[in-house]
Image 1 (cartoon, rainbow, N blue to C red):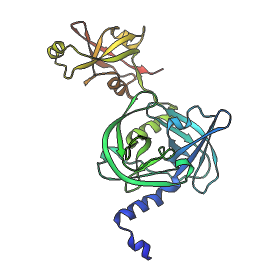
Image 2: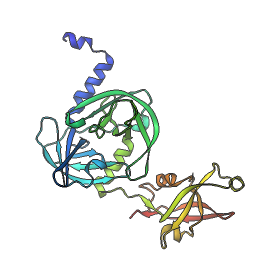
Image 3: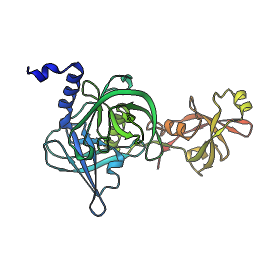
Image 4: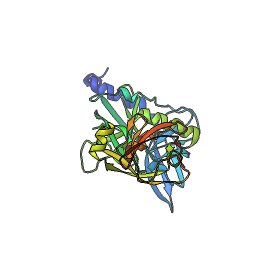
Length: 310
């Protein structure tokens, strides 16, 4: 062991090991739109047969997509599917077996543990930054307007381009997909948790999209009359005012009407549209759910069955 290796402490050895194990799995993505306009980003292989995960905003509306793995030639990539609600997308390249990264369990991630980000910021191949997981359970609004729940916050520095690569733990497992930075702040970077990424990637490979539930309503958060909230035992002070109910929709068939205030969906309180969007997840279509609403001063109870979103 040479002198430089002797100087590596435990932290450095951990980060170095993650970098060496993962660098060949992270690709640079080239996207062309319109008249030769080119954009770039990062992606990483998560199966050996050519599936790569990246961000939806990287490949959306692309005329062509290429992926370049370290030391390899550019390969044409096909878009398998994308999900703007979580800002995730799957692309696929052909060729020999890829060195795929393994998904970790983001529910076991703890504040303070090592977090390593790898990507291709501005086209600089296999750029690595390291830090720690700073916070758990953050919410981040996606480009579609939906909130992404349970987002990981890290101080591993991200730059345009590597904000689409993997966030790795000390064993080189993917615990998140780097997705956003706050430009006016330092050390505030975010990653979509691996549990979400794994489920979305599976749905995209299977269906090309994520099938979420739809009720056929328009709504906004409003305060509940305090006296009525206390009378009916609704904790919290807000509900979702139904500004519109589409004819023939699941909400219409359940008897909900414009002007109602939705306060409960199944066992969960619904304080605004973001709560409802979260509850209308991939497992909600076809599942009958009890709801409670306020109509004037009366409590309304009904059963509603979401359908796949159009």
